[in-house]
Image 1 (cartoon, helix red, strand yellow):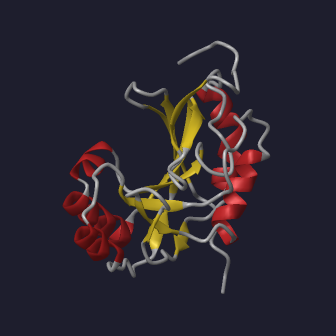
Image 2 (cartoon, rainbow, N blue to C red):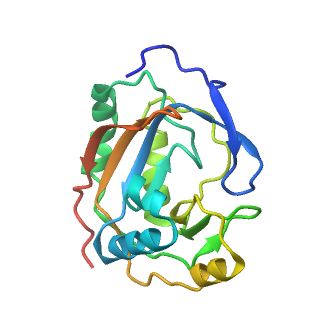
Length: 203
């Protein structure tokens, strides 16, 4: 785990996933919310069909911190600091059941994703993490949570239309936060899981 000071300008040039234009992503700690239940199984099935490399490299998830809305957490942050600051948030947040919108293609790219609403309980969780007292790199673009269906391949027009026509009607179930240290091109390192154990509001 790196211990040097966090440099907000220490980043690399690559394509912005929404615009296709170059952007710079800082190394640091990303917060992922893995998608469980039938929706997770369905997304994994689609990834295996359309992007086997993506399917092999990660499980279906939403990036809560690290790409949109906030840059990565400072790489010098320890697991103990993460636990101290974020355990109370996870313990007071109930598991989330979220609707997945129809697939969309990011402009000027072949990346296809399932968007989730940037408002509501997912936004509230995102904001609580941001105000936890940890240090983050500056955000590069607005909070736009999504689950990626296809990232690596260049899709033919027919293949793209086929993918965009698919629907994942099952709700996305999110019951934990997962923390990974990422420094491209090195493999990401899993640091910590925090289950969401808050009580669900009575109806």
